[in-house]
Image 1 (cartoon, rainbow, N blue to C red):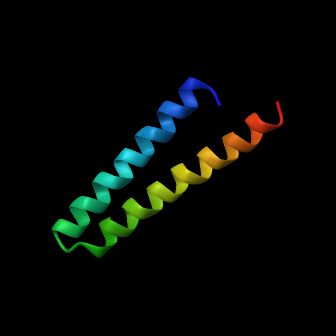
Image 2: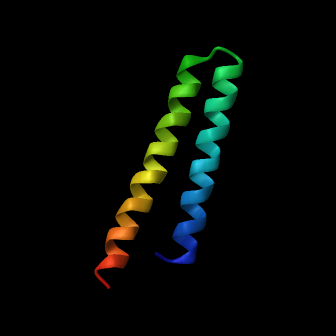
Length: 56
C-alpha cells in the first residue's frame, strides 16, 4: 500500500469517527450512521490494500 493510500484511508477513518461522535452527541442517528459507513469503507480499503501487498 502506498503512503498516499494509507493517508487517505486514515483520513477517511478519522472523518468517520468524528461524524459518528457528533451524531451520537447530538442524537442524530443519520450522521452517526454515515460515520460508521465511512469507517467501514476505510477498513475495507485497508483490507484490500493489505491483500494486494501480500501478493507482491
